[in-house]
Structure formats: structure tokens, C-alpha cells
Image: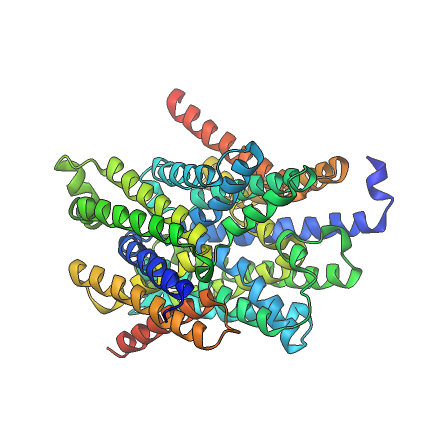
Length: 267
Length: 274
């Protein structure tokens, strides 16, 4: 475990797990996991658009995920209740991505194509030291932002009408939350890949929400499960190098969810 | 325009496109009504583990698609029920979990399978222009089966979707319908995805239905409008792709998105000036 790539994978993976476990818990409480799924795909179009325009790929990536995330919340309070608008927007953004890919392949962008695909399908075992640092800083920022909005966000999630009547800015909070989700999606897709992002958003939080109704315990369990998935998954992938690391991590997360399902189904 | 219909492959493509558009529209209308777009998207990406699993096991590709979609549908249905009722939080979480489980399995199958999964491109973006007669016939069979399900179960399904507790009190088998709907959606998606690819199957499921529901809440009219939008989007999209030599994915999704925006704008204007 002294190799640099393992250390980078553990640090970068833990950072992503912390942020995604925290954000994911609220995402499950608000029944918005679909928004996370959509944003991980939007990253694809954002990266390709930046590659076409010749600007820094990360600029396109984060601009796309954060803007579309905030746009989801602007589709009205309906987003939470009705998931069709998310589906329609995200399918069109993917269609745009297909066009960009087409334009890109016909242009003279041979080497840039490699960069784009690396940005899209980041692998946890190829994180550089610099990327790991950036991942850690962004994760701390996301967790800080979530801690700041956690209480009012919980209020508008549990009782949106009461919260609005008390003067809580429901729309603004929802937008801030999906903005943070956008940052998480942008960071995670380029560092560890879209698969791992959705896995760490949905499965640990779903297991936590099954096991407890207390938000504080839920957040702790959710981030704990996400961290455990990353650590155990990386160990498994390290021991059996034929296994893709993201598959190993996600498998642990899914197994944790299945265990929580079985424990609570008996009650 | 006649040039389009000279080639047998274009005729097959248009026939398949028509069946796909109608089946996806009807299944999608109920999907949007039941707010299960996320489930629809997850079922459409099950093509990936389905195709790579079939390649590894040496099964025919369609078998892999159907098995993967059916397993995912049952898992989603089971995980989203709590004490016999739909729990939206858990539904959201379990769908995401099923999707990543499918992807993780797909990657493992792919890494175990030493050959080249040559159809990866067509898996994502479909192979509209290489459709055989037998594919059209299978699609027609699945399509008719799907429509028959909605003809029989449509009314109670509608009731269960709009007011679950009341429907249950009236003796509607809510849980059974929940599972059956996801299975039929999975079947329709598996048949459709083989032709349209992952991107377009979801586009045709969600966008026409979402647009039609902006315009009307009536059932018959809504279903007819959804099917009509689906057909226009498919035909015009395929035609444009043929003539401009670009991927049909961009045209179909953009047309569908444009119609959805127009429907939203129309609704807003009607409210404003009504």
C-alpha cells in the first residue's frame, strides 16, 4: 500500500466518498437521485463542448454540471414531484453531446479526443498527486457547503409548505443544493468516473435511509458506507487486478445496500 | 423523398421506427404519469450488461437484453415497495443502485470477455439502418404484447397511478400492477433498445409523453398525441439523419426537446391569456 497510485486512489476516493455520501443522503431524502444520474451524463456534453471550443476541459465540465443542476431546480418545485422534465432536458443535452462528438471526430482533434475520453471516464487508479489534491479541496468545500445548508434543507425537504410560510427561501436552497450536486458530479466524473459517482450517491445513502430515520445518524451512516465501499473496493481491485476498480467499489456499495434491504425487510 | 423508399433497409428502418415510436409513446405516457422516468432510463441502460453478458455466455444478443431488463425491473419493483406502498425516497435510491450494479456487472463481463464487443457503438446509438425482417417481426410481436397489456390493465393502472391509497381500498391489486408495469416497460425497452440504442429509447419514452401531458390531461387524447409526436420525431429525425449524414440521435432528441418546449410555452400562454 505504499505505492503512490494506491495512496492517491485512497485519498481521492475518500474525498469523493465523503462529499457524495453527504450529498447523496439529502438526494435520497428529496427523491432526486435522478438529477445526480442526469448530471453525470451532462458532464459528457460539457467536456466535449469545451474540447470543440478549445477552452480548458474542466471549465466546460463544471459549467455544464453546475448550470444544468441549477436549471433543474428552476424547472420549478415540480422537479421533486415530477421527474419527466429532468429526463427531457438530459436526453437533449446527451443528443447535443452526440453532435459534438460527431463534429469532433470529423475535425482534426486526434490528441484532444484522448484527453476528452480520459476526462470522461476517469479511473481511480490513474489519479495524479495534483488531481488528488484538487479532489480533496473540492470535497472539503462541498461538505462545508452542505453543513451550512443542512438544517434549512432538511426543513424544506420535510415540510416545504411550512418552510415557505416561515420565510425560508425554498427555491434558492433547492438551487444551492443542486449546484453543490453539480460541483460534486463535475469533480467525481473526471476524477473517478460517472459510474462511481452514481454508485456513491445512491447506494450508501439508500442503505442509510433504510436503517434510520434520524438525519444526523443517516448522514453519518451514509458517508461511512461510502468510505467503506471505497476502501474495501480499492483493496479488492488491488488484490485482483483483473477487476476494474470502479466495479469493485460499486459492488461493495451495492452489497451494503442489499444487506440493509434484507435487515429492514424482516421487520 | 422517393429515394428514401427504394432501399429495403430504409423501408425496414421506417417500419421499425413506426412500431418503436408507438410502443414507446404508450409505455412512456404511463411512465411519465407514474413519475418513473428514472426507472425508464435505468431500464434502457441495462442494454449494456445485457449485451456484454450475452456475449460472455454465448447467448443470442436479444436474450441478454430481455434477461437484464427483466431482472432490473423486478429488483426496482421489489426495492421501491415499503409495507406494500410505493416509497419514493427508496424508489429513487434503489433505481440508482440497480443502475450502477448493472454497469459494474457489465464492466466485469466486458473485462472477462476477451473478444471485442464490436457492437458497442450500435449499443449506444442504435443500428437503425441495419435492421433485418426477423427483427421487425420480433419487434412487432413485443409491441402488440405491450399494447395488449395496456388495453387490459390500463384502467386499473391509471387508477393506481393517480390515487394509490384509494385504488387499494377499492381492491385494485396495486402491488401487482406496480411490478407488472415495470416488467412490461422493461420488455418494451429491451425490444426497442436493440434498434434505437440506449439514447433514443429513453428519448422516445420520455419526451413525447412529457410534451403531450403539458397539452392535455385527457387519457385518450393524451395517448394519441404522444404517439403522434413520437412518430413525427422519429420519421423527421431519421429523414434528416439520412439526408445530412449526421447521427439520428441529435436530430431526434432536439426535435423532441423543441416540441416539449413549444408545449410548455403554449401552456404558459394559454394560462396567461385564458
